[in-house]
Length: 155
Image 1 (cartoon, rainbow, N blue to C red):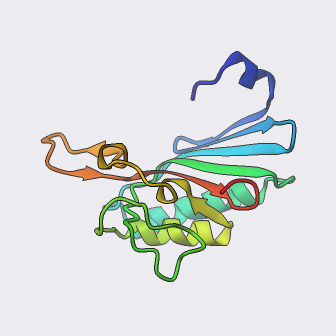
Image 2 (cartoon, rainbow, N blue to C red):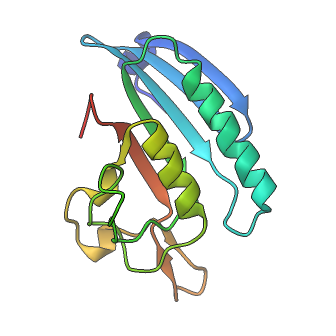
């Protein structure tokens, strides 16, 4: 993770939880900001590995003593799609495509539990600006990297 020298001055904590998860806390004028940067297991990973990962991610967010602005971002390997029926509290309709995957459910549950909204699904974007991963043969384009922010502070 890179940051400006100004951001570095506001840095309160830098915690490498494991090789897939980083917690960075900043002191802002209005509130504290906790930034969780993650690299989730792929959709093909064993279900136990995904469950352990999300349990650890939840433990990290639960340990944040002073809840301020929370931003969770990174490679989730979750195709969230556009359909937000029944999960309007977690996402809007501007995601990429109709196809979703199993990792979507893990991400939706985590966001719902922590009152997070998936930012990329809120605003209209051109198709070229929606996908975050392209297959090596350039045949497939997916939106698997996400930023989620707590609703009280952001979206």
